Amino acid sequence: MVDVVDLKKNYGNFVALNGVSFHISEGEMYGFVGPNGAGKTTTMKIMAGLLAADGGSVEIDGVDILRHPKKVKQLVGYMPDFFGVYDNLKVSEYMEFFASVYGIYGKEARKRCQEKLDVVHMLEKEDSFVDVLSRGQKQRLCLARCLLYQPKILVMDEPAFGLDPRARYEMKEVLRELMDVGVTMLVSSHILSELSEICTTVGIIEAGKMVVSGTLDEIMTKVNQSNPIVMEVVDGLEKAIAFLKEKEDVETISTNEQKVYVGFRGSQKDEALLLQGLLGQGVLISQYGRAENNLESLFMQITEKEE
Ligand SMILES: Nc1ncnc2c1ncn2[C@@H]1O[C@H](COP(=O)(O)OP(=O)(O)O)[C@@H](O)[C@H]1O
Ligand SMILES: [Mg+2]
Image 1 (spheres, rainbow, N blue to C red):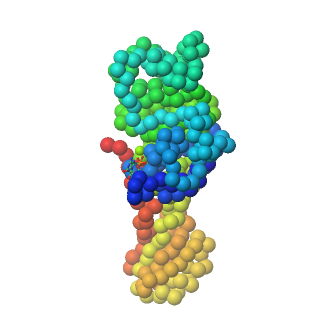
Image 2: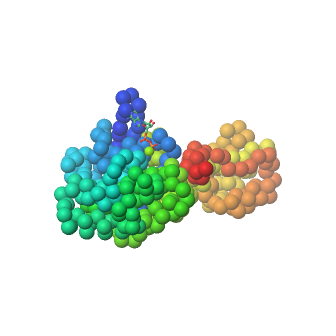
Image 3: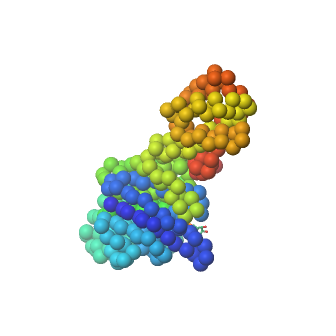
């Protein structure tokens, strides 16, 4: 459905996207996660046809949208991270205005607008003025507008940002319902926990690069495995290495003087058993534990809860 390959974007000398690639299958809800400044908005704006790329390709439903930007409007429903100001415009008028942008008018427009407002639980607000809506309601209105043209993919930039817990819950409910009816979605957030319950797949971006992509389980496993066990062997280094080489869960062994780094895919319990085994061989160890690495600290950073 969506293939982003080696996407590049510079702002002057600053490299904002340094070869971003990912794939989204039909009906999938893809969580695009990364700290502020990672390049999420830039990627999404390019996908929505609002920003030119400096390299790479974006294919949506078989259309190379960088080459055929005119087709983007029909393929992508883009929900920006910032909602404009709409003085003196009612919810129904706002919707009908956007329907007219897509060439839908009159009775058909009214029907379609009401249908989409219903999808986002906003039908009862039809006669309210847009500017008095809460942030959460504005977000959902914006979503309804994106759905008007039945896009192939919904691209939503931080849809839950700045919402209180109740509004966030409502937004999640709407997204779940859209997923149930098979809408393909790309949703960004700088907080992993916000997306982890509802997304099928997660891609983590940092400094314009995709760091890891997969189901949350796959990512957790990678985070764990990419942290070697580090131990300080005071005596019996050769014995220790011979012992480690025999272990199935040990993937790599490297040494630096007394320090031994072990790529290990076992669980926490396996880690403890490994230590016990080494000590049983008469190896003397003064320090033992998992090293913190970049992937883990990145993961922690975007796992932080919003205050
Ligand atoms: N118009 C711009 N001009 C210069 N730099 C920009 C512009 N837009 C974004 N950037 C920079 O590009 C990087 C990525 O920004 P952005 O895509 O907004 O990240 P995110 O949405 O992940 O927070 C940031 O360092 C940001 O400061
Ligand atoms: Mg952003």
